[in-house]
Every structure is written in C-alpha cells, then in structure tokens.
Length: 193
Image (tube, rainbow, N blue to C red; front, side, top):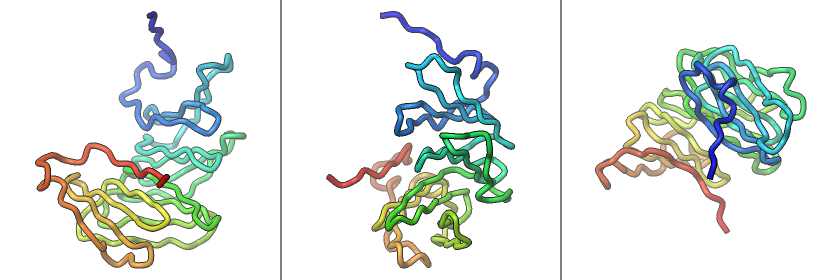
C-alpha cells in the first residue's frame, strides 16, 4: 500500500487543522487556522480556499453552506455553490466559538452556538430571533435535535439536556466524570432508525 501526502501546500505552516467533515457531494471540508478548505480527492480541480477574518475554531457544513465559528466570536458562512461572498451571521464577541450545530425542523433553519458562556445561543437563520438555553456553568459544546438540546460544560465532565420549550434551565444533568472518572472527549447525536 502506498500512502501519498495530499494538500501539503495548503496546510504547510498551519498551527491547527481541525473540524474535518464531508458535504452531501462527498467533498472534504476542514479548517486550517484562518482558512476553510474544501477538497474533492477524486477531482482534478484545486481545493476551494475560503479566507476567514479570524482563526476558525468551529465548522459546520449544512444546507448547502459552510458555517465557521471564529476565535473572535463571529459566525460567518459561505454558499458551497458560489463561495465568493462571505456572510456574517453573528458579529464579534468576547468569546471564541467552540461549536456550531444546525437543525431545520419544520423547515426553519436554526443554528446553535456554544462559546464558553453559561448559555447556548439558538439563532433562527434569516430572522432576528435569538434564543438562549441557560445553564449555571460555562458551556463548550452544544447539540440540537427536534426534541432536545444538549450541552457539555467547559470542564467536559457534565452533559446537560434541555427541553426545547424550556430554555431557562436544563431538565437533566449527567455527571459523566463522576460516572466513569474521565472527561467527555467527543459527542454526537445520531438519528433514530
């Protein structure tokens, strides 16, 4: 088996490559410091390079768009079909964005943002509505489903669950650290069969 180094010219000198994921067409997307990179290994076309105004700390590919959370608190996005224009969804803030999650239940696209504050921001895209899911601890990650909102605290030892219609406080908390003696390394939601 022969292994070949790919995209070395794109990632050379990069401090961090993270947030690797695929879009619906099978294109690979990831962040490399202040850039978002889209690449199809089977195509001869060069990779798509999207410059970001700050270091990309979270990435989400959904609904035909690439969304990036930045270390200055901004959330920006590009259309995959025409990435020439970057749109700002949220302006600069005092906290780096740690995670982005997208859901479109009922045909209404929404973005959940975790940025280290004791709340998750829930933004209806294309609308002025911004909701918050409050917690008594700083939150590093957030996940959204139609029937629940999940959050992981900054220490990564507790998992919180909110009912979508009760954002004032979590309905439940699981102390993962106490149960297994370890921190949460990663989390994802899987659709039910």
